[in-house]
Image (cartoon, rainbow over all chains, first blue to last red):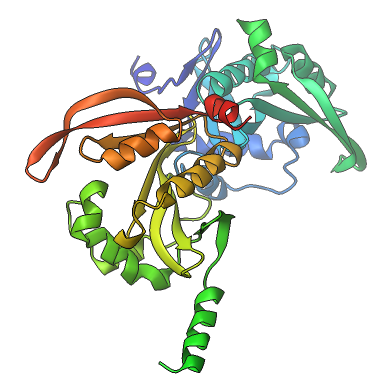
Length: 187
Length: 198
């Protein structure tokens, strides 16, 4: 019960909630960042120590924020299972890049990433007044590509052999969604 | 001053002027710390500050602090220019946006002609038009706000001439010269500015 009281829910979803980063969780994040399977598609090719991560995740005082980071909290399991973030928010073009990671492998394939992404898109359009949200995935990450298109994001371009991944060069797929498109299907 | 020396000073002056937006009689140029003394004079000048509502003395140190760069990557909530009179080759005032809200896409516009000899020549109007255009076409703002208090009839007229519409009156919002005054809040939307240009 006490644990529940300390949780800072920022966005409430069905099965998950998005919480501001909690530095007490830095070890969990470090585990995901270094986990061979979790980092595979996230392209973390260098080891990350908890200290390094702590520094990276430190909340900046800048306003408005260029990067917005949330922990994904699973309500039923009562633990954080991954993260989702906007980075490089451009307040002139009103655009941002989105990325999501489910760090707990046993929870992959349960559409939790989908739910988190949808919450972020809604947050980006309705609260941050963005007009365009982009994301990218590697071609071999078929699950992610399918998930992104199912949400309604459209393939915009393919960067040929952009990323050296698991011993070979693979394509990076760039997807995007505009507010108008999103409003048509979600309002 | 000898002719030669004066030429040299003119040259130096021009080297320090960086126009960012070009107008007809004026340019909006990047602020330069060498004008700190001048800006400080305007900010304290009783005649100038009356309408700018600077009721505190402004030290040169404070003005200079305003030139310091922001922490890395930080998004600024103000953008200021010096109004530079092209023919007389001198800075004559300031203009800018403050209270920029990058999410809601609005900003407050302010303008101040620090040299009274340039008042009533439509310079603030020209500078404002450049600034508004910059705000809508480069910064992608949605709405520009201006606040004018009652006795400032010149600014009230200027705001209306620029296409601003009155949004409301804040009763007895300002205490100036021993009296309370109403503040008239004006707003201009991008859609209306665009239509006006066409």
